[in-house]
Length: 236
Image 1 (cartoon, rainbow, N blue to C red):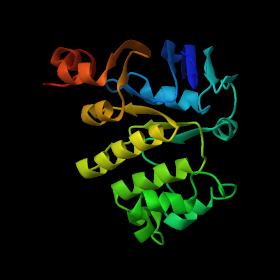
Image 2 (cartoon, rainbow, N blue to C red):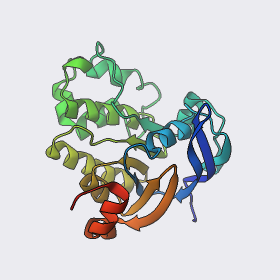
Image 3 (cartoon, one colour):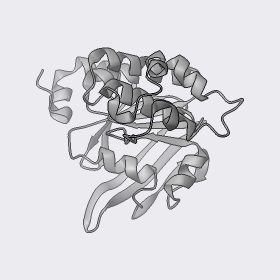
Image 4 (tube, rainbow, N blue to C red):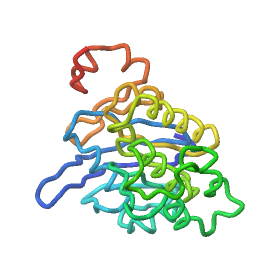
């Protein structure tokens, strides 16, 4: 693939003697890509390995033309890979403003600043003095996305962004993903919500037992009930 943003070759990783990722490979450019699959297939393990929280036992991760496997999470983030973890991981006692100000240094003159985040998510501007624990699930996810945007990176990695959210908030996230790609940011989404996944990206990578089993498209996955049952456990 020309202009590759992220390339994963033969990645193996796990926990102790338990190997979860088995020779996993894929590549993406400046686009949105979704990785879908049933529970327990290794999707979150992949996210942790890409971000350096879990070190691979084999394989290579190339981001922006340079190897990042073996680097610490902070060094990977500084290279331009921003992570929105499952569960959002906000600080309950810090206000919305305080969450964003922690990452505001160095954003002047760049695309994403706290002001730009508030423009993207007006609801956060209304709640800027509220603590993380006082926000609804949707507001927390908006803040998690906004916090990641302040890194002004090349790629945003989202782990189960629609989990537990109302359909209207999911629609907002879908719009944000499309906007980011239009503006030049790649987005890699790990998602179980079929509607969210197929609305966020055309490319769909189906993960089975720590590997990318097949690559399909949002249209094929949406229209093929047998494919959904086989790989996602969806009862059409």
